[in-house]
Image (cartoon, rainbow, N blue to C red):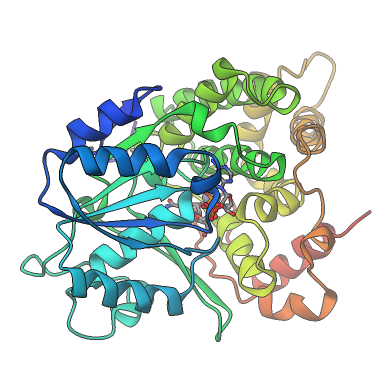
Length: 391
Ligand code: NZQ
Ligand code: ZN
């Protein structure tokens, strides 16, 4: 562990099936006026809405509802939420849904009482709310395991008009104060969304794992999480209501991106930058966009971090190394990743996502971060995208 860091995470997690009881306890710590934010209506068909509203009733809250948060929430929707949150003078924002709903809730919470252009200030300029600016506390009930939004400050918003999807990672004040994690709530997810969540988790771990050269405890933690994720994913794709597998996946998702396994390390995140650019052009589901480009990206950078790709192959995929060169072992590890993508049913190419040749130039404007084993050029991004078309 070579880096200096502070680790603090304020989210109180309630894990398991006693949601109403947990929610009643958590809601007791906040004022009367609650802004309830949710997505396109899945919580009304699977019964989650009834449980949540009954806890809100039991605690005597005055509730304002803000439904309709779409996957990859838009700037236009953010502006609507800012107005609603101000008008109802919310004491708490309760987000019930997946990453989109929770990300959006944080965006509204940060922006509602900001005097000025919130999009420009928080997302484009990446500023934090001033210490004297009011920020509304956020709590969440998670319904999709993947993003880690339930225990981090991430808030990804898309400016549709300008084809620009931007992630802002807010500081402690916007990290949910509590999150309720009931693995059973993920049972109603369509398989396509479950798989997207699973690959998103894998990608979060890899983005933090494929960087640095020192002996870091964070990397050993990452390996354990990846091994557990792979094992549980294989159970869950065949038996989606297997509580053990779904509970493992939910717990891994939270630890994959609550900043723990990135501590003391440089980090990559280039796959996410390219996938966000793909999302801005195609509205592709986040996890599938990551899956479609990951094998090509990692093959492209493999030789620049060969030692880590050899370790990934041996430890995570249990590839035997006898009689093989390091390049052969490392390549076998990335091939195992590609095979797993196919096995669980995540996207294996960018055409499936709706990417066409004429979009490549625009997608290649993806932000280049340079924290991984190779800092890409624009031409490199185009080459990786071309390598991610159907073979
Ligand atoms: O809108 P509803 O009706 O809720 O339906 C959703 C949505 O259609 C559905 N769904 C969620 N839970 C369900 C369910 N359907 C049935 N049963 C359930 N239990 O699933 C669809 C996708 O939901 P969404 O919230 O969009 O998915 P996800 O959790 O993958 O979030 C994706 C967003 O998070 C951002 C992504 O860029 C994307 O905008 N990310 C946020 C991060 C963070 N906060 O740190 C990091 C990630 O890398 C990611 O960028
Ligand atoms: Zn992600």
